[in-house]
Figure 1: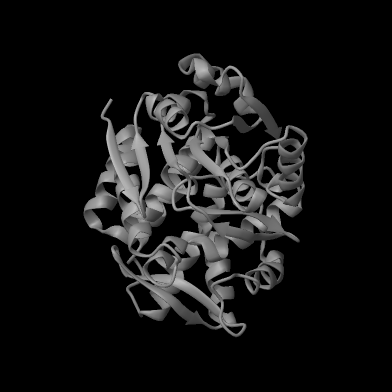
Figure 2: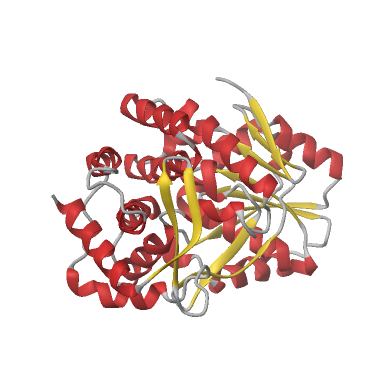
Amino acid sequence: MTEQNFSYSGVPVLYSGKFDSLEKIIRDNDYSRVFIITDKNCKKYCWPVLRKELSLLKKAEVIVIKGGERNKNWDNIERITDILTDNNADRKSLLVNLGGGIATDTGGFAAAIYKRGIDYVNIPTSLLGMVDAAIGSKTGVDFNAYKNQLGAIYHPKAVIVNPVFLQTLPFKDVMSGLAETIKHSLTDGKAHYDLVRKNVAEFKLEPIIISSLQFKTSIVQQDLYEQNLRKVLNFGHTAGHAIETLLIERGEKVKHGECVVYGMVTALELSRQVYKQKENKWSEIIELLRKYYPVLPLKKQDLRKLLKIMKQDKKNVKGSYRFVLLKDIGSPEIGVPVDEKSVTRALEYAIETMKI
């Protein structure tokens, strides 16, 4: 495999089939204790891989949290901090977040607030985590059914991306992560989009991951606190988060990326409306999304609830809906105000189009 190093704001992002960088971090910083934050599945399938590679982790304390988006909440934060306290973790302790976005978001937030901040390392095991969630120093949890309402931007010591963990993933999880890489490519440019489209068809993950790492770290480096450029990463997420929230509340087992796909179709239709684009402007991309992603259990009656959830989106200003839209591939516009009638029409379009 190809080994490559990236970085943002001094945070190394390492794409490698080895874990020697984690060993070096632990030895160089002389940590008093190491704690592994992971979920039940990752403890079973991923933790043995990491433990076998690094003998100095044999004395690490493993904290198992509940997985799944419905458990990205304050209860998991309390569980982590309770265990840290009971085990006398001090400010020289290290958290290693081993898992998908739930582990890295939740573990990172716990690290940010425990004793006013301790060190942590992200080792994402899902494709979604590798290309997006674990990178950028955003940490946090959902609150009162709203996505990422509580959190902090807090840097890890490193992000270690090792593709060995992809072998443990169900196919649906891989496809969920690939949705984020499609999002990256649409906001980046035609060359990136063509690379992703070609390699998705051939199911070659390494070039897709490397392209997303390069893109995501570059964006975060330029705009860590999401004042401007980083907002392009929200493409597809305004509607996507609302759809995910609604379906999780209903007890549906949906993947984040699947909901973002619906969000991207919604944003593409809004782009067509706002910029008066041709009817078939986005047909190739929408066909790509329809080919690889499932129909979600949504119907026209859900529109009112989706609009209500979307009004809580952090990107909104004075109650108005704000979207990232595309003038073209690689030409995103952030904070575009859209009226409720247009949003409703675009959501309905996405629901109906993905059914066909």
